[in-house]
Image (cartoon, rainbow, N blue to C red; front, side, top):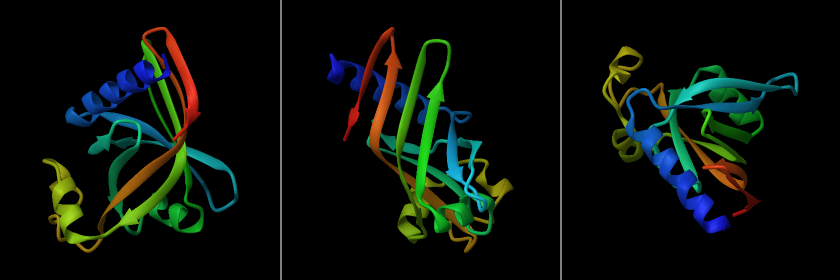
Length: 140
């Protein structure tokens, strides 16, 4: 049963990353030690294993990750609730930045080689899934 729910959650995440307006809620710890949540666009994922988002190196998200890389991601609707807990890393490798570049990003950065543009990669350690009226909880 768990593998079926994990697979369906991965399909939901894949659909969200394929949408130009696909998004998730990302929760990070702020400079005062409190959790903060914000909506972020999803750009790529590998099932529930990892998800990638893009940001600026000088924004709050990157600053918070540098101080505490623990995070949670939630993707939900009336039909599902996918909550993942894990860690974040900031990637600045030019090939990864190029791979994650999407139409519309030029509104924020000059191109994939913009020194302020980075990729935030979330790696799942544990999950709580509710998809299609079935649930699964566990660790990866």
